Structure formats: structure tokens, C-alpha cells
Image 1 (cartoon, rainbow, N blue to C red):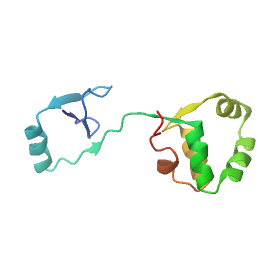
Image 2: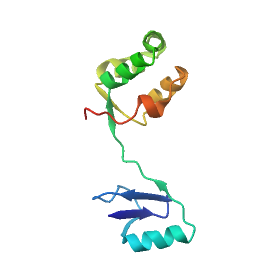
Image 3: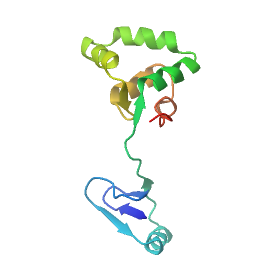
Length: 117
């Protein structure tokens, strides 16, 4: 099924309509007509979770585990508590995205979909 959202300029190919306003299910022919008329939507990516184990393994494979340990030690107590207490995070968690950038790692790689969830 093709779901489009002209408000957010997104398209999603899946069985369920994404959450939020403005989504409509359209036939493939209509979607193709919209694209032919110049509409160039971005792909909607449903939120997904990444386990802390997977994040840590990817950082280890990148050779940055000592840097991650040092970075966690500099976090405010609230953020340290969350890091230590949570077993998974949303891929778009702004703190984790910032941590990846600070470690000079690509958040799209480190926070990519978890094969174990």
C-alpha cells in the first residue's frame, strides 16, 4: 500500500497508515502520477529502537569504546542515570545522536535498525 502525506511531503510503503495528520492511502497509479508531475517526497521512516548492547558493539567495532566511556562519564547525572538504566533507545534520541557526533561517528550507522529487535 502507498501512503502519502502532502503536509509533511512524505511517502510510506507499508500495511499500516503512519501516525499523525495528513496521511492518505492512494493507489499506485495516483502515486506515480504525482511523482510524474514533479512531487518528490521523502521516505517516512517509522521510529525504531536500538539496544544499548548493539550501540556499544558498533562503537567498539569503530574503535571508539574508550571515547564512549569517557563521554558517558562527562554526562550530567540525569543522562548518566538514563544511559545506565535503559536497555534500548529510540534511534532519533537527540542525546545519542549528539554523542555519536561528538565521537565523530555517523549516527545513521551507530543507531541503524537493530537486527535483534
